[in-house]
Length: 192
Image (cartoon, rainbow, N blue to C red):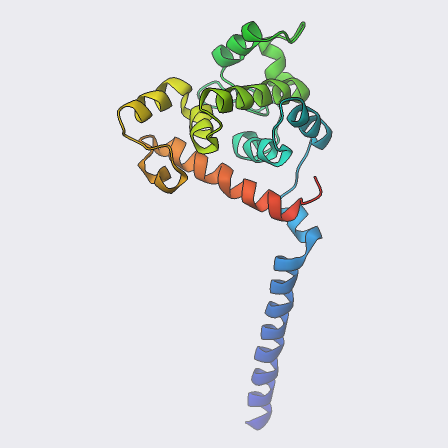
């Protein structure tokens, strides 16, 4: 009977020790963090973030939420590419800024094009909304017209503390997820 109790006690101790070691690795391991929160297309993200004066980790966070770094992603609503731009938004961006021979179709096929146009659009939304990141993220997802209406009608204050007041559940969740990943990327990818 005593051998059985000793065995169970040792087993529990071993499991506890293993859980502690895994916990420490999970919390402190750069390798594990980078495995859980990877960034693909780093060069393109950094190049375009620098071009449009944005934090590359913000761009990576948006990409993570939009497509999980899948360049040929197409949403059920028709959003295209790695940064999930709607075709009419991509068309508007191409008319607004000179991107050479880039086409809307390129947005859904070429990650570099999707990243460039999406990063330009984030910078444009930040300009339109006076640098308010939370409002700009909501506009990226729901469209600037909807967000302007929410702000005008005082449906939403535009503050991070009131994200729960965003009328569209999808947009509310989107903003929360981008901010979550942005925080994680800042912890894990400090040298980017």
